[in-house]
Image (cartoon, rainbow, N blue to C red):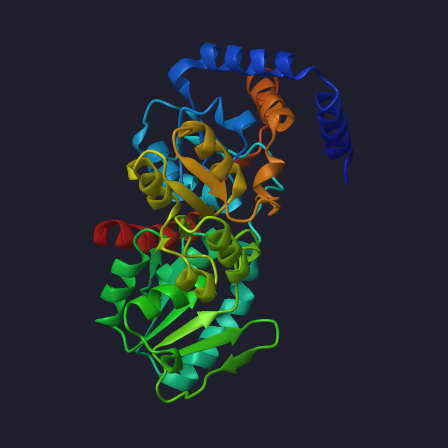
Length: 365
């Protein structure tokens, strides 16, 4: 750790001893000072202490698109995780800076696939199945993985459009290589009528290819998962149904297939919000996704009985690294120490090919 980092850590430590209301007041004051020259966006999974300042909330791609459509803001304060800030940088103009309040706010799912691992898997699969294979990556992946997919004529998907995009891809390639979330890939594939024995799994750590019948394979999944959505299980759903027979359960498609099958509905973050909004008054709904969002929905819809599917589940630990002290420090740096801002910049070549894959998805959507 160099002297600058030591100094920065010492400054940050002081922010944890400050009065939170003073930080809140300074953040609002800084936002007012810069006006439309800055845009502050927050992912749905952020804590309320961050969401209160947001000019816009949404999922990762929606926020990146909002940032890209805003041509007046020169600084985009992105309260999310690294891959989200990277996507925003790829889609925004070169004159705009995307700032992540904490550089350590990563994503465990995105980190489960790196370029070295993916390149080795790709070589194996090309040797095994030939050139008629298309890579597809979930938006929850690094810019390097999106770039790899773009270079190899692949496409990005979100949890909301995955079914449409994968259906399109299956009409154009004999095999699909889906990464990094095996749960999303499996759930969508099965919903599209792909049989379990047509789905294989690539395990990057052991470099194993697992298939019940390698000759019938259509989909090769990467062995990755979201740590938040792994915390839900069928027993939790069963117990709630025993206590509340009328309950409806909706879960995110990053959950395991067993959980998805046991639920009443499955949908992206935006779909979950819409489902609750459209449900009749008094509905009892258990939600299987990040608890920061579910707790917020309980307050937004007090006339409905919104419940946490797993009340003791941890919210996204890495997302939560962006907290009030980090945001206050970032906003103070914006005013007084702009050279210390954590600006996220994706190199030109990586950005180019990642945008190819992203644009293909956006055109399909």
